[in-house]
Length: 235
Image (cartoon, rainbow, N blue to C red; front, side, top):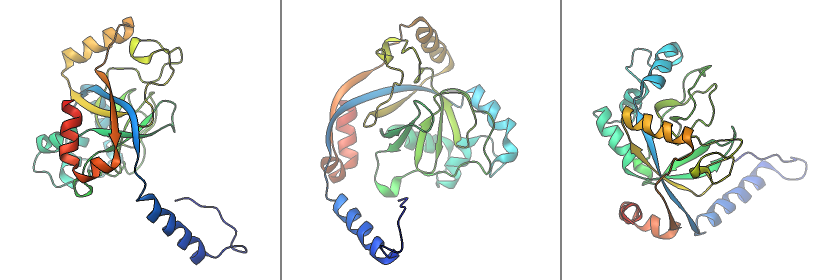
């Protein structure tokens, strides 16, 4: 929480009691919404984010690590990058908000709390991050909507524009911003040839993504996250 209050009107202890009560009540609230399940292609361990990562290795926690995904696998207790990669891509991600930079989604993985992946940001931010980089900081994954500074650990790059001032491309549906809060994302690993094909389709305005309408319920999800995700992804 970030709260501004007047201590002459309410004490810290009183405020803390109010916040605890709000949190207790919020845990009982169940959310149901009709939303989109979107398959997002990602070229993991791509040459562009790898090059940028090596350029700014002096700002990283482990400068001699091969790449950011290797570091993320290590601190999360995975025996290999492949095992981490499987955990990262096997479950869907929930778009909790869009913003900070126009069009940038913050995604929270839909898994049990003890399986939550977390990684710290770089010790100091990079001055460059490729557009559409898929990266992670804390418990959130994001997709950089534009090229610029950033400190999240970089895992790969998506070939689809997610912020377009003119809303170009079939997938944008005339909107400037692609993602909406409540969207559910499944990452689809692709190779370089597939990446190039998606980029060409995006530039031609003919890009089509695998998107379907789904209903999401927090109560049903929390009862059995693994089973719920399996049913959700299999349709």
